[in-house]
Image 1 (cartoon, rainbow, N blue to C red):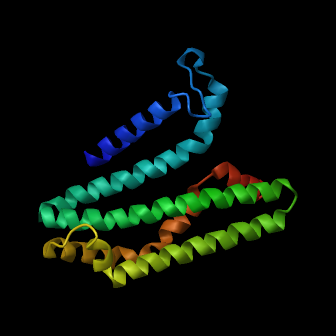
Image 2: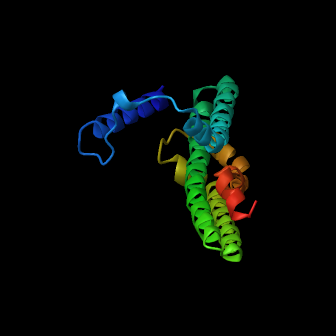
Image 3: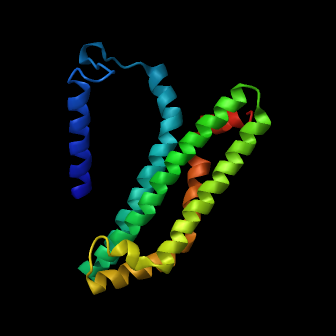
Length: 191
């Protein structure tokens, strides 16, 4: 519920800002009409990203339901640990979008080798950084978990989660690299 309220309030704040007149964008509902070619272009890129996000959130929800059988401390530990995974995924996705944008720009300028080098170096950096965060979370889980609570049962459950999942955080970055911005990836690779 907190997540739903957070996004609902964020959407309301954004809408209020956009319609306040202070924004560069001035939306008008009078000029809104459905245009299939634009909708198709957005879906071609956004559908895969949306499915990845839905799958990730469904996995966390199913995991939370399964962990719920072990009590509130287990849910709190799992949820706090899963938040660390989610935080890494968001950062990795953002870095991936920037990297593919740069790659596409270089490719359009005829710098194919430089574009490929940018893609691989950026991907390697994202994997190494995300993996380092995961290993640190696995080695020192209390540093992250104690930011949210000091309940010993929650800390124990969250530490077990982070020790199990943390060493695989590098895979989050590699997944983000392979699924984000498919059209940019195709342009970068010359397909």
